[in-house]
Structure formats: C-alpha cells, structure tokens
Image 1: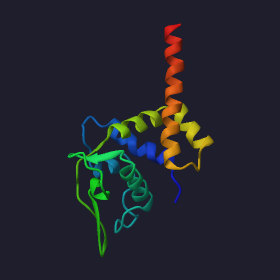
Image 2: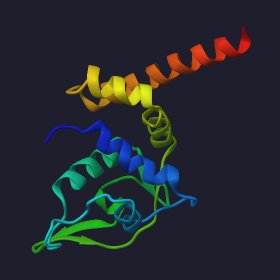
Image 3: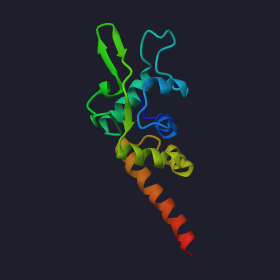
Image 4: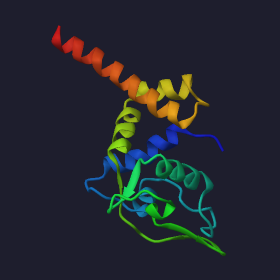
Length: 144
C-alpha cells in the first residue's frame, strides 16, 4: 500500500478540529473516516496502514505520552482479528507540526503533486520546509 498524504491530512484534521486534548477512535468515525470493513467484522486496511505510520513516526501518543504500538490507538490483535478499545489519543508536538503543514492547502497540494511516491521522512521534512518557506514569504510581506 502507498502512503496517501491526503488521507493522513484527513486523520490529523480530526485532532485539530477537536475541542479536546485527546480524542478516541469513535471521533474518527464521526468525522467520516472508515475504521471497519463494510461488514464491520474487521478493521479497514487503509486506516490500519496509516495509523501504523502515525505511531511509528511518533506523531500520536496515548495520555501517558507513549507511542509504542497500535495499542496507542486502542487497537490490538488476537486470533479472530483486531479488537478496538476506546482509548484517549493525542497528537505529539511532531504530529502537530505535520498537521499544521498539511493543513496548509499549498503545502498539501505540492506534496500530493510533486512528491506522490516519496518516503514518509521526505514527506514530513518536505512539509516542514514548504510551510517554513510559505510563512517566511508571509512574514516578509507583513514586515514590508
């Protein structure tokens, strides 16, 4: 599966749009993110793939600031598949930085069109550089 920057942006927006410091998986569903398969007997592969990216890159954590596994999201596996337990999750500072960059339409579009198959690290670093460049131009205009 390929990394879908728009999908990651949608996931991170759920955190940004929340009025609370922590959210749960049910808030993703309320925001229109598909978590389960159509028959609700399994977990959606696209969601799992991107949730794993968020965890392994330290963009989300639990209340105790741990980001070790999908258990951070309240997801665990047994013989019959994935089990979800509602657990409070939050964006880390790094997650907020990425969310802020992807929340900028110009940055998101550049990443989608110019770097569609880039590794995650390049997407993250590129988003920060693009946002910094965009904000520097804004600041220069304000100071002129």
